[in-house]
Image (cartoon, rainbow, N blue to C red; front, top):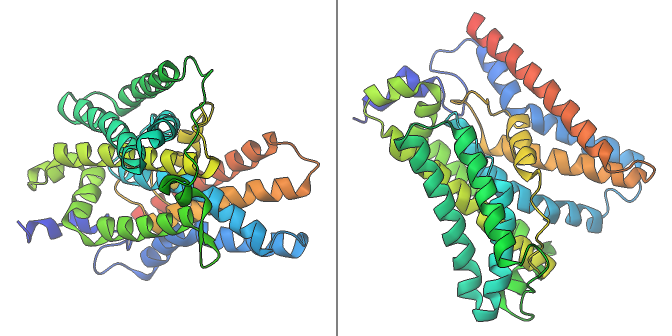
Length: 340
């Protein structure tokens, strides 16, 4: 079994970008796909630092890091889903639901405040995975239904959004959102740890090989003995867990479960993943690229705020333009790799 898993289906999709014996052109193309978002991020940060005196301050960069951490956790789970060739439109609603459940549960202690959103949002992800893997339903339809379901649950427990639950002060949950470690917010440290674990899981584990194999060629992966259904169920469950955890941390940061959050967050997560180099068609992607994509979107948002004369609509315009450029570049790079 271990010998079979080193077949071209997996090797062609490994995160290093190319199979053994790849030409120099293939290696350069793979590097461009993997690190393009990081290069764009560094250039954007450099330009912003030279253009705005307040951009490179520790307070501003700290705010960018903390605000990025919640979207980053959601995008982490989305990366696994997209690498398998799927999509998860429910993460925005499950993120908001996780925040409300965490705030409500904080009155019963930290364990409930953290376990409840993880259990409920993880269950939503599990159901998504079961319907997609076992019933062979389209991920778009299943997760769209889950998005509406999660939002409906949220509205039901908040009396149509009229009730806002507050996080208990001096609770451990509140500490997670407010405290700093070595001058950096705790949510940032949690995000960093999760991304390290996510990168190891995707790049160094048998499960990661299955994820790439399913996204690269599902039929071939099945013939090789890869557990296709179990892999799909696992990635959608992971996506739900990440969204729920991000929502809980956001509630701790805001000290309340805000009901209006999460609208459009699934699109931001997908954009960050794609900008980071992961192909929407599946089989190719990077955890590090996703993090760079999230930071790039947040830095752009911060730059627009620094300008002051531009409203928030320009954030969507610039983000959309970035996404369009990246998709075009990915298509061109993919065709180039096939030609080499």
